[in-house]
Image (cartoon, rainbow, N blue to C red; front, top):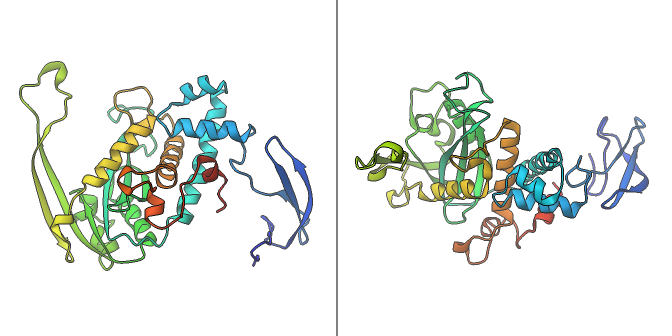
Length: 328
């Protein structure tokens, strides 16, 4: 097993020794040589696979995290569109690994979950209903109410199987019993699903309640104005199991986080042509948003702190450059 400063071979896990350095456009890179199998390799770098200056890559990531689309970022930075997508892919993969490693042992007392709709490549009525990578795609988010931290996320179809995988991931990140609130989606609370539900996955670690909101369309809006959002006519809160406080049983904070996702991620803005064309890029964009939201963006209600600081995952506001260069 590797010590704190020891590097092991990627192929055989054998002991490695330093084997010279070289300079690329951004830094001096260390090379290593495996004593056992003779393979040589270099150390991992931020945004591995991207061959532009780090400052330019950071600028692109900041643009993508502030509502800008791929083509707009390419025009403003004078980079090729393919380069922007390469940066998105590398940054998204890095952020996904970082979130998986860092967002652990969360001690939030109240957690809410909700889903955000979008579509990939084409709208649902055009795509095959069995196509897992095209058509309607949902992003599951769990949010710590008081810390504002996005604890975990999952991108996929809105099915019971996806909901259960999302709940299992949430369970693995929590360090204490918590109150959990969702909407009435049957993937969470129905006992008729073969894949399971909240009680099957979280029954021994949470107190669970649901909040169901009833909406009604205004009959005065007709014709071209029928897309206007309906208005709220009632809220029903229900204890599902455990001892949840109904005063805390709301999904409003998770829905507000959904709004932040739609505001700062161009792929989620309604009624535009900025929808994702590939599911992989959609997942990279969500990972990038969640990482920046948790570690880099100061939340107004937290008094100058980021959600990660409020959850005691870090002690300072991260820059995007620090986020991309963080060791995992």
